[in-house]
Image 1 (cartoon, rainbow, N blue to C red):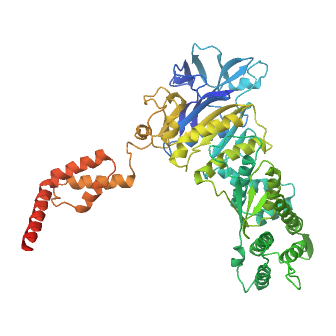
Image 2: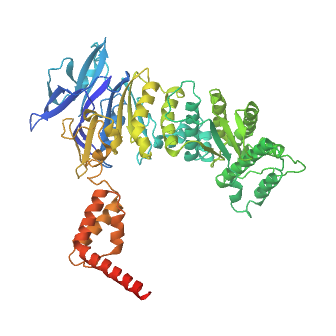
Image 3: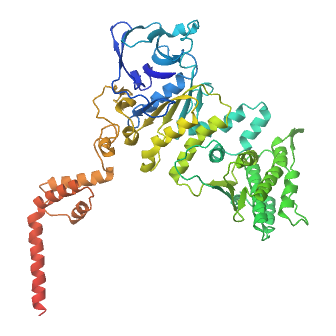
Length: 615
């Protein structure tokens, strides 16, 4: 199933907007009456369409929406992810959707439109049929019993933080892999916990959403790198994930006068870590960070719950023994108005912290974890580590308080490589490590997926993405929709795979038809595309440089400026573009050439006079 065309009557910036997602057909909706909602939909074949252009059998189509920031690109994605996945036509009852479905190797094209609209089709292409939305409730027809909302899974990806991230949280047909969604994932998961009291407690004493997000991103990346399902990654896969123990918490344990006993307890533990054995020192530092992390949470959050902790060290001189004894004997209930109330957080820590330390010690013995220093260790990324790492991460997330006590780092990856790894790891996790059930047809919406990448990574982003996604979803048909405001993606696609959109004031956008007069885009020179008004308004240099050059031009054109300014002359000589530099030098010579020549001759005469005197 594939979505070919949408006509949107009214949605944000989109007013009577035609969204042509098809490369195969060209659609044009024309009103046939000024007083009534009567329209004619003309459908013609695109003669430039190339079958299997992307050379991947499961890629049905690719569309890129091109426009500057604020032009309305995201409005199209918001419409698609808000109204199409929920399986109901209630929200789109004023719009038109054209989609296709294959039955017994024959492709049928359905034009779905509202009952109150009078729509005629102008097409000599067979297997196109117009049907009002209401008729989809009748499931007697052999090939028209499913609509595009019910038979397609929608996946949305955005790296950016959005002000209003998710319009519909519980849509079964939408999988949201955006950063905003993942940041609130933990809180939402806890909010649906069956244990209300535990939920309220955990919401406040577990790690922040940001800490949870960073750790989860790392876990997804490890799942991908250690997967038996070999996926092409366009860079050398890292062999190790480096982890640093954060020992800074105890330096800011709040008011020392107020929490003197806690500060003294932590300092005494730290002083006992005198062993010269790196592995033992690492475990001791890990335990120390756990104690600090515990008190940061307890003293900052649980201000209304005062527990009496056993902070006595006594004759025990081993860090591990002291900390194990401390966590094992955490109080698990408190008094509330004379009534004992259980505190499950401490009970959980008493059980899980020993398991966490034991698991790490086992991994060190197995060689899965390598100890580098007393604060650094690393996971060796191999196929066999997935289960071990999953146990490690799950324990870590459960015992972590309102701050993290471990820092994760891919030392061998650049920022761009880490960004792309995060991008593909989200999709890999969805398919192999989640309980989401995807349909056989998948529409993937990628909102400026190359944002923040180095230009070389932007240049290869599209190729890397379709290679990865086509293999990952090899058992499904996929339709890809990208948004972009850089020319690299435009150069990878023929014009009929592009939607050009621009803002025309008063909160409205203009979407150019596939029959626009824009130049051919596929394989086009990046500099030529940059000069297009959709990107740079014809300017190919930085704004600061442009203003500086404009200032020099105004100086040279002003008849009142009769004395040359040496600073401007130096700037002109440093301009890298030879056409601009030579033109400005010509203007300079016309204005100041004679004066400069006289000045140079006078300087030479003075030099000769000095030389004559010295003889």
